Length: 135
Image 1 (cartoon, rainbow, N blue to C red):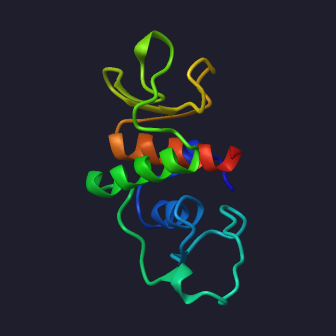
Image 2: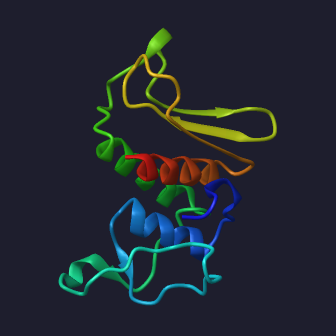
């Protein structure tokens, strides 16, 4: 996968989230530059794994929250688990000109997965891709 922090919002990023976070493959993949992003080759054994399009995870906050819920389940983070100083293991913080999203697996671990961007949806999507890359 390319440098995650350099990804831009839109269909290419949405396709990556759809594949790597939700495990769904697109029947048609948006045009990607050769070698820029490597999508896993999949078989067509299970048609339930294929969809025609990906939701707008990187630009529509309603779909972005689906990403948060999925990552929490993938990392086995219960909704009621809190970390050091009573801060949750999924955090979203506005830093003045950017948003910062982070997931940690254990309460006392340093931040394992973090994404920063001017858009809250993008911060969450970048963080989610880092989380599944390292899982």
